[in-house]
Length: 160
Image 1 (cartoon, rainbow, N blue to C red):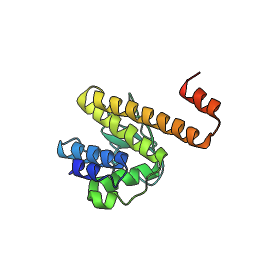
Image 2 (image 1 turned 30 degrees about the vertical axis):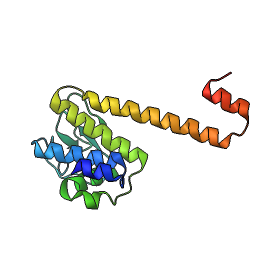
Image 3 (image 1 turned 120 degrees about the vertical axis):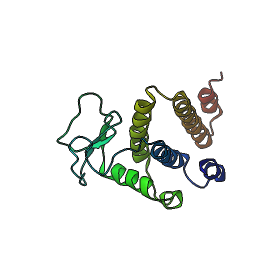
Image 4 (image 1 turned 30 degrees about the horizontal axis):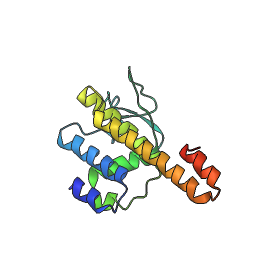
């Protein structure tokens, strides 16, 4: 299903991938716990919490596990992760996710996956590098479109 959705090119690839990662973790029995604190089992309220792949999910602000926490879990990230666990992609695809929220979701799910696998997924690092290169190429292309001065174009391209 994920490849079919990606091939249609109707949705941002990051949203599709985060949904796939969340569903894959669920199917494999490593579903992130995001309803209650993994340490004290109290229901998580709408406030900035913490996330730990090592602990298996979200932590309330009063609990801090020994070891690594991937960082704060914003209210919006918590809501999106809950939606991804509960509904089909058709519903998730309608949610507009800004770049900051996308990055936060990626960081937490990558942390969870890396801890589960006990290593970093090399393909994820490769994809991040491709995305960085694409973004850099797009910035250069935008600069070239705006610039009509041939010497400026040559300097952007590194030509004499």
